[in-house]
Length: 87
Ligand SMILES: [Zn+2]
Image 1 (tube, rainbow, N blue to C red):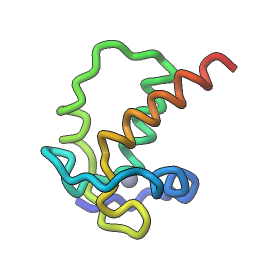
Image 2: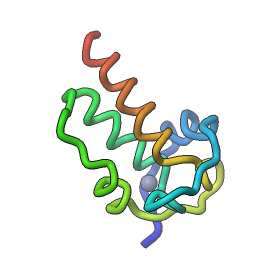
Image 3: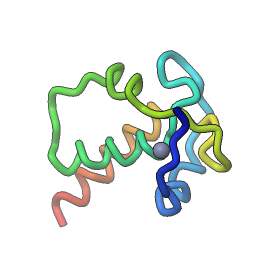
Image 4: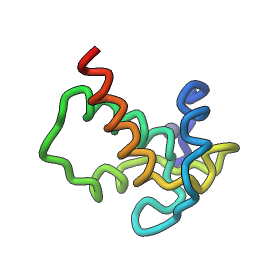
């Protein structure tokens, strides 16, 4: 299934991430990975199974987020979520 969510805000962040197509994250939607990471960061989630998370993502070949590393996207989202949780 291809991701059809509206990621117009997230795509602006994700487009600067490195290209990465390793492992189960291959072709997965980097913007979805970012948004999940962000939510986990806000909650400071500690028991994370990244393999399961990436596995569960929908695929995306779309525009700016094509081939962006979902590992990088998730971790940047997590980082920003933690930062925003202190605001
Ligand atoms: Zn998506």
